[in-house]
Length: 259
Length: 352
Image (tube, rainbow over all chains, first blue to last red; front, side, top):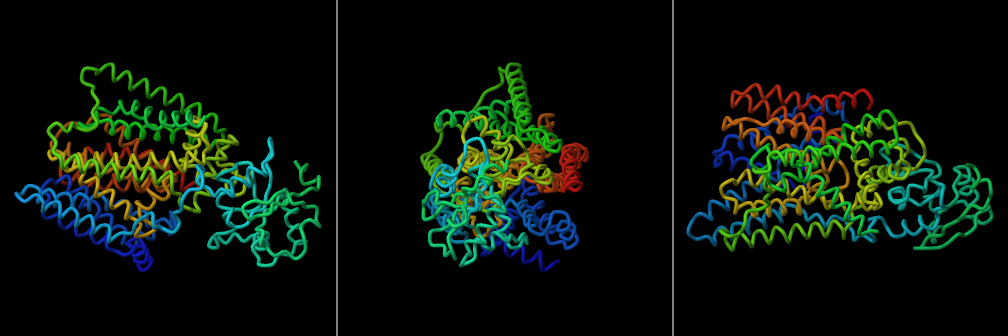
């Protein structure tokens, strides 16, 4: 348990520098801050939280109750941002009171630089990208969902992996035989149809049979997808092509009348 | 159509909370501050939403009923606020920031830098998108609720019908987003990704401003410097995936982001107000305890872990303050504030 908590704390710290500045700020404020109520809330209370976080018994109980994935959120109770900003501003305030005020400006710039070097710029995160529309989902999801929606009813569609996260955010009437749960391996929710869809070479007969079994009205495949055979041999027609994907539509009546 | 929707969102996310926040003007000297009114009003609305929504989710009622009852609640709170305003109108005034009449050039520059960085973050909330897998659950719940009128009875990932997901239903933040979408006519996916993100970012800095006002009560010219440092710490807070700052910018439409960046900082603000009053041996207004309980309940709305985190923060601070200031009666009032969270935590253990 101790090792798990330490590992979690290391992961939370990242490079560790910002958390180090937090501890430095705590020490600085312990020395310089005179107001007791501020010392209690921003210095004593966080220290108690840290002691609790590293307490194996406390960790064991919480792991059992809330699970190991979210135990790190106890660390959100450390007011890291407020304490560092408060300490930095207090330091700036001290220098501002003296005659050569330019020194305080230099200090503020240095402290700002230190924060920037110690942290990591959030918009450099690889998961950030420019939004393609005001829905904040890829435009291909919007266009394909709009194309296959049928007024007054839900439709079932089979999508490649890169769509799964977005389809149901955008359209409540486009259903899928599997969703994100098939992608996250640690959840252990394997889905045979997903494995077939994502395999390098897919057998068209098997895919068609499985898709019909899952009552899919549409199958969306990348244009480059290698198929052994053609879905058009199994009552599917090409409904459209967009954004590098082919949309197949099931033309067998039973799929459209099952409810 | 979009313009009307944006106006409605502004009304529901800005105007209504500011009105409702009038109930809490007696909490502290900061109570008349527009930012304090906005934040406390939103906290009050969230707490009401939690109390209305969770029982109806568990009873498997339709979303329409939640919407209607929450509308009634909101109108009621606005009327109470209006009543308080009329009763105390001689003393009621609003101020946001003091004027720069006596201010210095340097102060104006620092406010300018802060404003520029804030506007940059708000623009980025519209311009940039963060691909987070959890949106497939939370945002889809909002979209389904608004469309199908059901709450937690459809599988968000696939759309199939399912048994009630009571565990997630105990923290119905996505239903609140669905409510905003219903009121504005703007799709839930846009409401979540853009409107709620912008609101959360602005509100977080509003809380930091109020904390700054408490930390630098006599030297208010240092508040913008404090805010600039907080902005830098947020903007460069991506040193790990787990930080609250990462959640604030990247995953702001999820309830857990609101828990880490609004509810917990608001609790720090409220506890700072309490400790200050205990230190000065001043009376704590009844409205303070209501707001504290509302903030804790809002934590439950945001995340099922909210009950635990808010109770830990309030409980440990309460114990420290009771021992330091020898005011043990506050522990009783704090325990009362924690009670609703305890109830939701018990429900989580039973249903989860």
